[in-house]
Length: 433
Length: 143
Image (cartoon, rainbow over all chains, first blue to last red; front, top):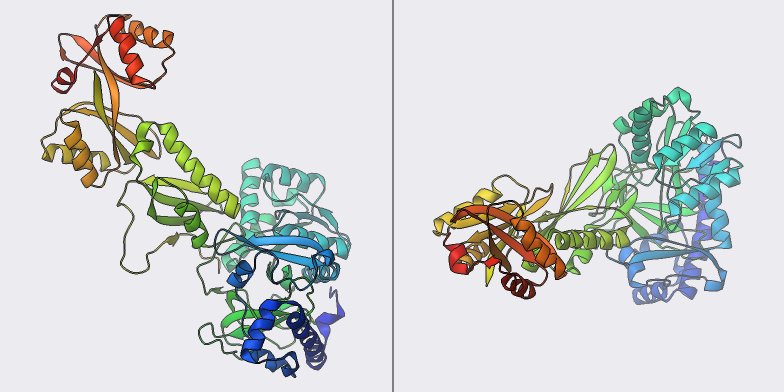
């Protein structure tokens, strides 16, 4: 089902709507956000300079570290009394990045997530189990609101506790599963262990996001859970889930471009590339009030296609994300930068400055092992002290990243030293992109 | 008298223990007693050697994390109840034992027990006062 008329506008109608909203947004951030005003003044660009959509190219990019540098609310364009919700995501180092939503932002976000669910075939008759984490992560609440808006029944289970997930799936006859693709596969393993067959469940659709997945993974999920696997895309900086979504034609992910204006750029030169060419995806929010983003570099590599889709939607499609232009890893749906782990390790006494991060897949779940060198001999008094050290490292990483890691202590001089940029991350997972 | 014990951090990787013994052998250092607990991730190798200071230096140079600790060595008659006697003394003095290990040396049929306690000086006094035979460094290193 097509949820919103915004998904079927003609190109001319869409462009006119986008230009009007873009001009309002530029004017708004120039007036309300010193960060943008300063940058625009330095370049001698005034809001009036944006006369057509392509004029957006004159404006500078915004990057993740801008959010960190203006932590927590420096980029907000609305006064805090108008903010009704905060969410957060990991930054590139220890500090998270924080976003805020006004009442109107919440309505737009819910609408975008309702479109996402409807495009996957979800209706008011469905019973939807959200196995994304709730809390500061946008995944749980974002999908929850969209599904409620659509009129479906929501089971706000949140992440983890697979046995209980399966209990509710059976007893409440869940039809739609919302989680990361790797968690869907993990659930299928638990099902096999517990002797639960796909026929024992009523699942028919999966709304998967938070990380990419390969066609192989998709067919495995479909086969093991007996469902149609749909993917969606989003990021906290732009809104959370609901930026783009697959329809049942599976011809890429439709972008809610009446709210989020996409560009594809050459990461190195910053030059905008024509449709169909591969490059870094950049978004400008067109309606956001809480924290508008101008030309935000997502670091995600993809292509855009503007021809109308066979599903009837006319909004632009992005291909499934093909990779990243930085070293960000996605671990169980959580964005992780090696620099965040490094910042934690540097704050701990007793271990050396060298480290290595090994990422593997076990039972379809991502696992991180952090290897560090033990240099403090006083820790050898007892095993207890060594355990305390590994516990401290695990705890601090958990505080920053919200994920559990394994810590492996090594003897000094065992990690490889290289003259140039050392290989800090060894990703042994099946490539997700 | 307190005896110096050498502790070496060993990650659970084949060949690491051999690297230690090779280094000691190359430096003519003799291992008198050796103890390592079995864990999955890593181990702490504890040793009594004839030249502890030299052992610490050469192993550190070799890239190992090494520490030196004071432990107590006592001689225990090789008959039932003798180890218990020594441990009862420590227990009465509320001195907790971190770990201990024993070996039978060439000390006139006595077993040698190496004990690591929280308060070595106090333990030493109590043991000596109770007539337990505490061994000197010469006796232990020269076993």
